[in-house]
Amino acid sequence: MGEWLRSPIRGVLLDITGVLYESSAEHGTVIPGSVKAVNRLRESGMPFRLVTNETTTPTTVLLDKLRSFGYQLEERELFSPIPAVVKLLHQEQLVPHLLVHPKVEGELRVGEKGSPTSCVVLGDAEDNFSYANLNSAFRALMVMPRPRLITLGYGRYYKHNQQLQLDVGVYAKALEFACGVESEVVGKPSPAFFNQALADMGVQAKEAVMVGDDISSDVEGAQKCGMRGVLVRTGKFTSSLLPHPTITPDCVVDNLAEAVDQILAAKGKN
Amino acid sequence: MGEWLRSPIRGVLLDITGVLYESSAEHGTVIPGSVKAVNRLRESGMPFRLVTNETTTPTTVLLDKLRSFGYQLEERELFSPIPAVVKLLHQEQLVPHLLVHPKVEGELRVGEKGSPTSCVVLGDAEDNFSYANLNSAFRALMVMPRPRLITLGYGRYYKHNQQLQLDVGVYAKALEFACGVESEVVGKPSPAFFNQALADMGVQAKEAVMVGDDISSDVEGAQKCGMRGVLVRTGKFTSSLLPHPTITPDCVVDNLAEAVDQILAAKGKN
Image 1 (cartoon, rainbow over the protein chains, first blue to last red):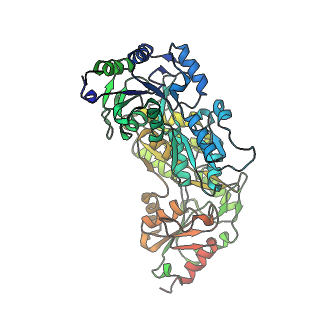
Image 2 (image 1 turned 45 degrees about the vertical axis):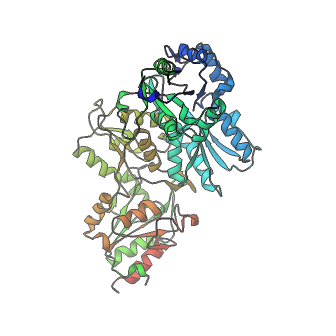
Image 3 (image 1 turned 90 degrees about the vertical axis):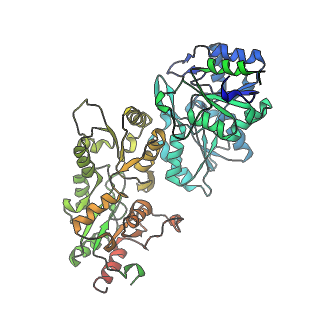
């Protein structure tokens, strides 16, 4: 049993893209062993939740995709920034200027049409990240009496179609610099977001582990929140990442199957 | 005589966009009083140079535009990042991956076609700052054994067509975050760039003043270099800029004419 498992694990958080499946221009491909690993977690009675920063697809479409790969999942098991930000917008009566993927614009449109915007919401807009659209978001922030930049995640890049591509955090950083504001993150690595999933399992951070392919959003985010953070060698992982100057994962595994093997082997032994 | 002029001024550096003319979709418009102010500087024998981060236009085209407004200038009086970076690329035998404005691509293409790129050169690419192009630059950096990000300026925004629009520094910041690299600035506020213009006048930094509309690239950049920094209320200036949390201009004036009035009134008095 690895050192990182000496203190018991009572709940598991799983990243989706790069852990359950590899993203591509079409449907993506399932990662070998991951479906069985999720089934084994469920059969063992180990609580788990999925925590994703995926904002190019509505949650229901993402669930359908995962089910088509063979994953048996319920919507309540999936935590995504989109419902979280919609809740925030309603609670604080914010009208967003949206710079997001066209597929999720509908879900995020809150407030009366034509009313002045009071925040910018930034998602993984992909090709919508044009110079014109980034300028519009910038100008919207510059005229707000109290500019608020809300970003759905803070990732640097992810793997799509066997290539690395820029993630929303890069554009959040750009607008922060342009306007002299700090962004508010909804999604990983925000502790509030992780804590929502932990509370739903009724598990404390120190008893939980996050498994992901992003050394920053997943591993460092989990560790800063008091969890353990396991890095998989699938998804966006490249060997040049390690050793990392500031982040040391609690464990590095080939894939989710190996992480689940270790977690379940330790179960009951401590 | 203002406090900032107690120690003598022996050379003047002038920003161009927002100081000599206001930028627009068409030709732009001359700023009232600026042509006369430049003429007065020359007649008084006060050495001056133009230092610009303008990289959407070849230097010769920019000079033609300035002359069409009535400015009498020689090419050797204008310092722009484009010739400076071309020199650097040749000196260090670098082959650039270019993310720049289409109008200046030709000038910046250095190295044999098809040879592997060894740096990314970032200019004010405007609409060329698409998601696809930023991804290409990002991927180019990620495969370089020793990634070098060279940026032609580090500005946040400028005024064009009576609107603020994002400048190259915002995209430099984005790529720095994505790749974990620091960019090398060619242009303002790099001290090497200011020093080139100072050396050309044979004037020391402490005897010189920079006049510009960018509180960061012009004013703070000049001050960090040992010069005085004067902010004009033309160009991108907005009153919400002042007081600035960290930068205090040596003087704030309505326009270049007022700056030159003060500089020439003090001449010979100290």
